[in-house]
Length: 297
Image 1: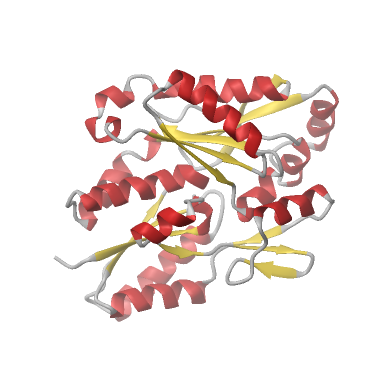
Image 2: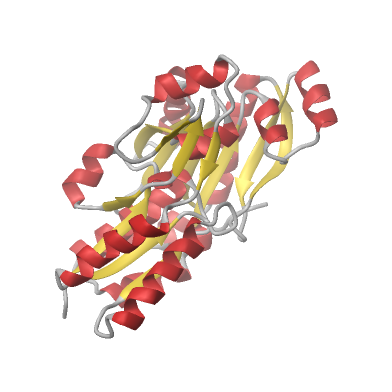
């Protein structure tokens, strides 16, 4: 059996130390700000990126580059490796189709190559949790096909609850209307969003006030977790819950404390939301990514 490498893209929001320790190969997604394209060697710090948005600059985003995909996969397969790629949701970006096309072309040219692309139908550390589970299964001795099948069978168990601090960025991205954004801002409404089974970020409700929105996404998480953790020994032995934020660390830590108060055995990971997602969610966005019984939308 050939060795295989797990790859993903930068929208998975995995911690840099984890990426390095586990040998995960990252394919970048890109963003443009003030006429400069970022995503490869050139990047802004999260603080610089989100402060630029607070200052009024509006970034645009771009999917993964076919040439980079080709060179990344080519290097791995010519080293004799198989590839399991876990992609950002195809419903949110063209990156998944770019990766699938690149993999297909290389497998046609190199007939002994194997590149499996799994569409996570997810975002941020919801996608990252799938990568982490794939790594865990690999380390337990599972093969590439078995892991891919497991992920496909459990896609709906990787859940995301999300809220944003500023409705403008949702309106700019077409998630809500201008009128809804204006009225909602006037009366301090905060949306609750989820990634649904189709991999789309969709609204699931609104609450009034920031603190209420944060406690609501935690409460929703608890409901969605249900009995799933106890029912699946593969999950309950490594329960990880992720909190992601758009340069709002103090509030992310507050949400982490709320989670630990309820799910005491959880390993809570906190990380910043990558710019190519944060361009649409804006500064102050907070999300929780976790294992649940299903994705409620």
